[in-house]
Each structure stands twice: as structure tokens, then as C-alpha cells.
Length: 111
Length: 442
Image (cartoon, chains in turn red, purple):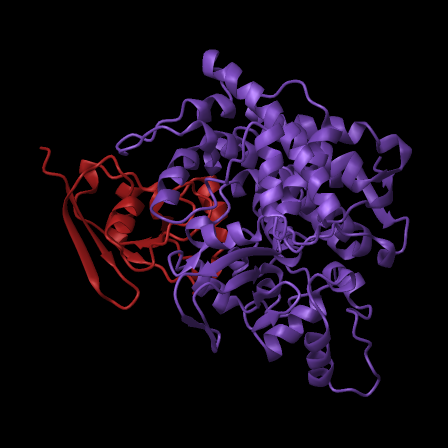
């Protein structure tokens, strides 16, 4: 234990950013923002209020990650041009041991 | 504003037969955002800027007006090159700053610069202390309280069949919500409205010296009022935002607590920013309902569906942003929108103009709730300075929209749209007084 988890972001251009030994208990957004993952802007600081940390969760991980709640779904609806069934706001994905190996694609944000 | 904006706009007369480019060029050549006619109905001015001179130097303001969506995004994404701290300071009480500061120090217990209007990394620390207070999930818990406030406010005037949408509805609702959040039980709403305008006038660039002195006195009153509450919460913490800020700690930071002056500036910012701008959004909503009956129909159809209502609120914010211009200052020479800017160039970001850009929001003057990119409007700004109270603002507007349309219909202005007055400021686009009539729904 205390080894942390591994998460991978695929940036919009296709570049893979893999982070190992990540401390759980933070959000996936925080990992992306700390390491400057392109497209994880996180303007609102993790308040589920701006949709600038939008990711597509790899299908294999959808069940463990879970789907967006009503409040997050409303926010994703405001960027419906980029919304997919596996869309999530990464600030709302709290990392835990169970998500070790998680892989997500960063969604475009239109600017 | 579609109805009013079809009128001839701006101080430059439009000659029949003149090409749009020539009209736009004449407008840019002769006008300033501070001209009352432009300030009240700025759409044609924005159109001309975007088409002809996207980073336009306004001689009277001595500022570059940034009008295109992509340039505003560029500025918002680079808070180091485009400094909020320097831009805000240069805007604040411009022309009278020293005298303003002296009045505050003499009668208002001090001049406390806005800690949140700063640059990273200092800004990051301040912002962290505030982020959690306003999460969408936390704000959702306030919905029943906001609903009660909106209903009681409507009850106060509904039987008259008419009201001032600003003074009778928008302002009392937002003031009561923010006072409840801050933990202020007893207050004079008229005073708080006056204080709010006094603060926002400091970045409005349209006050004269006499007005500055009156505004500075009001801000002294405001600070003395807030500081008394803060002193009380230092000794007797309660479940409210003033207590949260007075006792705030950012764990893991070298300097985890707020200095007293920082805390005063943040409480003041919450009181004002959480009030005037949201009230403006609600007034704008009533204005649109009274001038575009088809939008009232849309709202009627959306009132009981959270997704549609959320889209209604967002399109309202896009088409009529309450905050229209906040400032930045360049910290190095830089090229923006094809223009070379020196270090120290003072910029005003024209949010309403960006929201009107046709290649981002087609048919931008049409109220269209089904846009697939609604969330891309810049009414809350963007980047690390994006409005922190956006979830609370959205929730207040959502509840206001829902309760208004459930209880009233057949909205109309009781004065010609052209007679409506707007607050003299470049920072917001706020109707001063909105006389409307309506029918009570059965």
C-alpha cells in the first residue's frame, strides 16, 4: 500500500501522459492540473461549475468510475458539442485504489 | 436586447446609403465606450470593433478594447502576461485614486485593495481559500432557501400587477441571499444597494470627483458595517461565510491564514460581487420577458425541467452579460489580435462583444437555448479568474426565472424601451429602473 495509483491522460493531440505513484484522495483533475496536462484548465478550481476539465473515460473503466450525477450532467450538457456517453468532469472523479490504471482522453474545449 | 438594439445606436448618425464598413469606421473614429448612448446600447459599437479594429484604442478611456472571442480567450489563459492586478489598480478610482485612498483611510478604517484581483501565485492562495464555498453541489443545497426568498419577494408586489423589476425584485432578492450567506441578519437593503453601486463605480470609469467623494463615503460606511460583523465573528464564530473567512486556513500553504485587510477585501467582494451583477442578470431576464414574448413562452415550457432551465439561464447570460468589461494590463510587449501592444497597455475585455461573435454563436442576437456550445460564453470570464460565484449566480437566476414564470405572464414594459436608463459604467451593463406590468397567472 501507500504506493499510489497510476493514471493516464491522452491529450487532444494524442500524446500520452502517464503518472505513477499518484496519491489517491485527490481528484483526477488535480493530477492533470498539477502536471500541466494540456486541456485540463480547471478554471473553477474543482467546483463542478465550468466544464474545463472534461474527459472521456476509457470504456473499460466506465463501470468503476461511475456516471455523472445530475449537477455534473447539467454542466456537461452546456458543452453538448463535445459530450459523449463516457463524458465526465475530472474534478468529480475522486481517485482511489480501485481506479489504479485509469485511462482517460482529454475532451476538446473549443479554444 | 434584441428589441432595443434594432434602433439606431451610438452617437455617430447613420446616413442612408452609407456602407456598413463606413458606418462602423465613423462610429469607431468618433465614439467612446463612455459616451452615454454607446454605453446604453453598445452592440453596433462592438460589431464595428470586431469587424474593423478588434483591439481598438479608446482615446477617452486610454484603454485597448479587446472585442474578439479568441483574443479574450488568449488574454484569460495567460494571467502572467495579462495582469489582473495591474489592470485593476489602474482602473480603480481612476483619476482620483490618492484622494479616494485618503478618505478610506480616514473614515473607513483603511484602504484594503481587493486581494482576489491579483496575479498568480498570490492569487492561487487566495482563491484556494474561497473555492469550496461556492461549489455547485454546495450551492444546490441553498435552492430551498433561495426559493423562499424569491417567492416572498414576488408576494410583495404581485397583486399590484406592476413593479420596478430592479428595485422591487432583482435587488431585494440578491441582497437577501448574499446577506443570509454572509450571516448578516439585520440590514438596510437600500443602503446595501447604494454601497454596491459605490464599489462598482470604482472600476466604471464614468464618475466625476464629486461622485467619487460620495462613493468613497458610502464605501467607508460599508467597511465599517462589515468590519463590525467580522470583529464579532472573530470572537463568536457561526455557520456563515464571514466566520469562514475570518477563520479560514489553507492547509499546506506557507502562509495559511488571511491578513485582516485581505479578509475585509474578500468579505466586501462577496457582498458586492454576489449582489449587483446577479441582480443585473435578473433585471435583464425581466427585460427580455417583457420585450420578447417568444422567450417568455420558452421559459414557460422549460420551468419544470432542470436541464432546459439550466440552458435558459446560460443563454440569458450569453445574450445579456451583466459584466461587460474587466481590465488587464500587459507586463511585457506582446502581439494581440494583430496589434503590437507595449508593456503597460491597459486592456478592457469586452465580454458582450465576444458573446456576440457570429462564428462562435451563429445568429447571436437570437435567444437560442439549443446551442451546442452554450457553456463557451465568457460572461463569467475565464481562466484562473473565472467568476468564483458562478454557481450561486446561476442558482439564483434559475430560481428567479422559474418562480416568475410560474406566477406571472404577459409581461410588458410600461415605458418605451428607449427611455430605460443604464448605470454610467464601462464595467457592467445594468438597467437602473425597469417599470413592467404583468398578469398574475391563475
